[in-house]
Amino acid sequence: MEAITDNYYALYIYLDAFWRRRYLIVTCILITPFLALLSATLLPKTYKASISIAINKIVTPSLKDVSNTIDITQQFAGLKAYLSSPSVLEKTVVETNLVPANSSEKIVQQAADELKKKLKITLVGEDVVQIDLAQSSPNYLSNILNTLGNKLIERLNAQNLSVTNSSLIVLENELKNQEETTNKSIDTLNHYVDTHADLTPAYRDIYFARLREITSELGENKIRYNTLLTEQKELYGMIIKLNPQIGQIENAILENENKLFAMRLTYTDNFPGVKALIQRGELLRAERDKLYKQYQNIDDNTIQALWNMAIVPSNNKNEQPNPTLTSQLEKLRDMQLKTKGLTQQISDLSNQQKDINKKLRLIDTTSKTISKLNQIVKNNQNAYSDLLNRYNLLKMTINLNQTNGSSSAQIVAYPQKPIKSLARPPLFFFIIGIFSGIFLGFSLAIIFEFMDNTVRRRRDIEAIGDIKVICRVEQLA
Image (cartoon, rainbow, N blue to C red; front, side):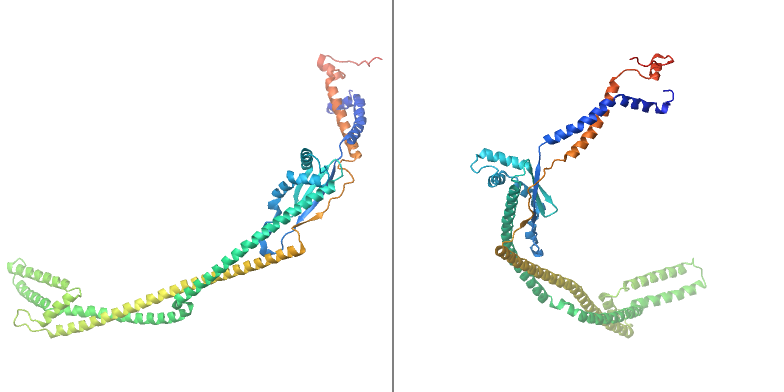
């Protein structure tokens, strides 16, 4: 014992305990395999069989609405409820002779309930329904599954026929409505083209050529108009200077300046006479500026006043009609007439330009509208053609089904009578019994060891009594 170190002391304790309980462990290992074999023979045997039914998909792409009705992934819950319904199961137990045909209703219901508990209906992939049946006897398994499979096929055939007939009626109505829609779209297109005949893309080049001519002519007229305006302003400035009233004031200003100059040679600006001349000069200039401002704008009243001054003499008897002013006014009148004519031409050309630009914009809009209407007509025609193809294909499908007796589903894997049950082989139970015995034996050994309070090791005695153990006396016989 002294040779055992502290690192291996704990392992030694466990090994020592298992060695002392070795008979218990071996006994469990020897007994449990035989108990497992005994339980395997006493367990009820279960036999299982299955049938697989494939749902036929409609291969015609145009009949997508009909094929959707056969989509088993959406109808699986309903089909499962149908096969598990009491009415179907009661008919099945009677047809397969699980119970005699003259049995009471209660017995038939009990047999149907038992059959429902043993049934398992699953969906394999997207188009295969598998029906599994497990029971204690292999008898009647194939008959029951075949009967349920045939009932499922009959259900799908009836449903497919009903949906197909309904789809045929719906397609007939849709075909009629689509034909009316297509004709209306064609009439709308023709009416729009007739109404906007001058706004079709064929007129685009004509309008562009005319627009270039108008733009060129409009530019020339604007240049002439601006030139006339400049000349007219210059001429009017000369006419204002020929205004008799302004001329008289200018002469008076000049005469006053001469007198002022002569007075300043003798007197200073403080002299009353000089001051009077200065004030008179300021008044004359103010009056002149006022007249300039009055005749600044060219309007009919101003020009008429100038005509009156040029033709009708003033109260001054020595004053005569002003031929220079008259000739300039006549020239101004000619310029105004030309300006007015150019203004009218520019306005007319601008209106034509706006009208053509508007038509060009409308051509784009009209072109887009015509393209849109053409596309609508094309879409309606394609839709009508598609509906017509679907209608013909559906009628052909119905005729083929009636002629060939095609089915919506078919059995792809028939049930076979099971030879062996689902129970595990005896060897499996024997091996499980061995492992169970090992586990049970060691578990009991550990439990008994914990329940045993006998002190067997020197370290434990020294720790409890706080005394040194010199030697150990072997157990006396």
